[in-house]
Image 1 (tube, one colour):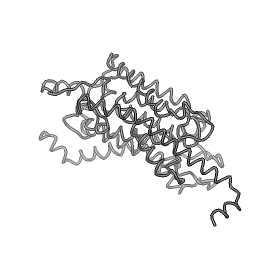
Image 2 (image 1 turned 180 degrees about the vertical axis):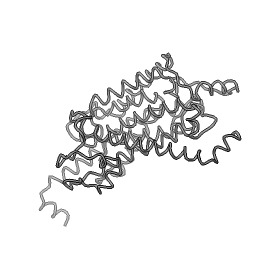
Image 3 (image 1 turned 45 degrees about the vertical axis):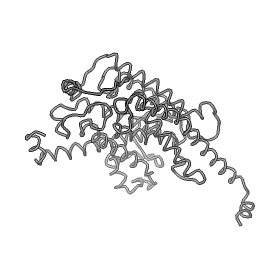
Image 4 (image 1 turned 90 degrees about the vertical axis):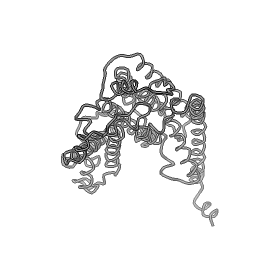
Length: 384
């Protein structure tokens, strides 16, 4: 670090900048989370998400502006409507806090770190909030916004599925359209290209060119490599989605399932936004977590065991966005043979893990439904 940057790191204005940027990211995330609550409630019902103004669902009194503050409004009201005293579900501040925290973490992991946690992309030479003032992070800021939009769509889809409703097509189509257009026109939105070569020795000239190419640059151009990356991501998103939801696709039924309709679309979106290497990682990680949860709670009811697959996809996506450099396996790190073996093993394991999860879920649901059908006197005899 240069003497100038060392002096800046000890100055009060530097720390004030760091705190202000972090708080701003959290506040913006909580505000977007507040709007996301409206989307989760209204969009599946076909209602307008902008009109009318938010109101209490019990007394239908419009919510005052001071009561509509993210998180604080619910705390100041103590979880009750100001007019009719009806309880306000805690899920509203939870969504606001969740989105705010993830936005803050994405800023720290992508922008503040200088891209140190991103897969394949060489990190910036420096890190910290001052990079924003120097114009060194336009590419990372765009990437963070790109990922934040994907995250809020997946969060909304997970909550909609948790409410036993169908994910609206317009929510998915808007996200897909923005991902395709922006991904093809802005190369920096895909730090991992479709084809990654094995580099044994990297010269100082190549390192200097990579810094000039990535650090702070943001290009808007139609490049063949960006189109190929998006197309490969779209293809693998479909493949991983089919492998992830195969029990629901090929064995449809009216009984409850972990994979409601249109769950496949979420993996398609992740493939477009993250690229084919990272969507394989997300699919495997979410399938593994889902299988572990279902096997742990396969004989008893639990809140986690009743969550739809979209919730686990959301959790795995968050881990991938924050720790992509550690969770994504690339041939330049392991060599082609190890890379093909590990990636192929992940792809093969996805349908096995999700099939086992669905079997455990349906077995538990069948046991619960059979117990509900037993008359009260018979059940008391059996348990005595």
